[in-house]
Image (cartoon, rainbow, N blue to C red):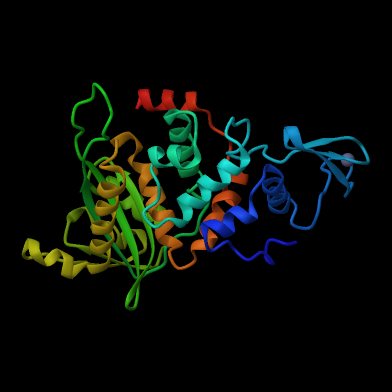
Length: 309
Ligand SMILES: [Zn+2]
């Protein structure tokens, strides 16, 4: 069996048949980690036997033990491998995504806290380090995203957050998107967003806001479209406005608004799913593939970073 040779489960029943047990999940992780077969990092041996109860592979030549989940979001988790796989599948293939509460019920997880942590670990795995920049023409605009998270006790209605959005224009459809929470709409905030996310030399289309005035000097072909009346904004920048509208609908419908501190993770989830909307099966593969490269994070780290934010 190879990764390339695997047909992706198209239905929940097919998924259940593919990954019914922890061993089936481990077989998949072995393929992800060693597409060409086991390779011992110490002695270069190519034979290993499994120590399933600890998700370890032991080299037959030198006895070195390699963890199947080390360095992944699965590592040292009390959630079982099939539950992880189900969570990744549901989050990457269900069009609106899935909330922690839905996940808790769907997988029979013992607590809302466990489901919440699972969701956030997967969201953090959705940002590919060193991902490629967008290529022009690209529409860029900012939008205010607001609301509060239902069930958050002792917190005032949060102020709205400003989000910068970039969308590739590809003829009669949108290409990839990038989104980032920014502190304000000044050139000091907008210029770095463009420089980080869009390849130099690209055509960048914006409204007439002065926050974009420095783009030519940074090596972009800037096309400002001065706005004369508010209702024309969606016609001047149709693609970025359509994406922002979809984002707001999704945030309200799926999560009933989100905590501003976590907004960037929800933006990353939206971006992840949007950029893979034509190849949904790749979303699951890259979610676990990305996970292999990410460092594990604990609930305590998440909560402490939240309270300090
Ligand atoms: Zn070895």
